[in-house]
Image 1 (cartoon, one colour):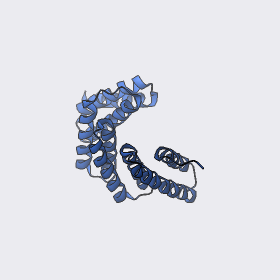
Image 2: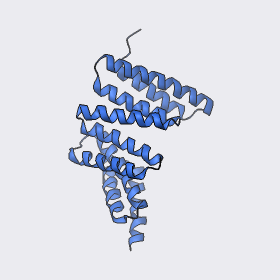
Image 3: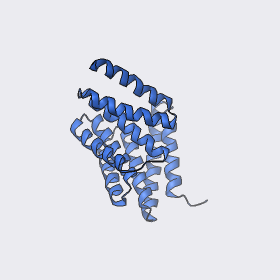
Image 4: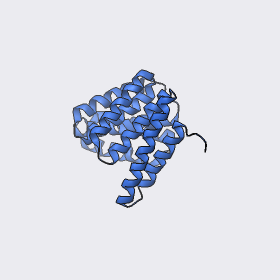
Length: 195
């Protein structure tokens, strides 16, 4: 049998996670546990092979798996560790994505100030890079929608409109109709409140 690479292990574990979404609860939990073990193996392989970027990504994906089963303290630790690894790597797009996920977790924990801090840092990072690839543009658009929603909830309606408008343009560029439609609905509703 061929030796598994960290990337192969991550991809397989992530597919198992996706597969779990359609399973009954008992099967879902078993599938997520198997994916968790596989992701831990991916981390070990990445570290053994000095694949820092793959290690940071695998830790991030493991944080998602821990979050899926409600282990939020473990997820926070893992996302924070992934952020630290990304800072060392100096990959601004990767770092921005991981910080946004940490912000999402803080939002789930109703820690709005920490969420805003993460979203602000992620926003600054995305604005500092010249995003050309569709994955980075999509990640940036997803951040903008989340941050716009926070701004809306804080009654900062014009800021919310601005962020939704930027995200809408990105979704249109990527031909993601659901995303652009969601932004359009939000913009129209917010503009109705301002009038």
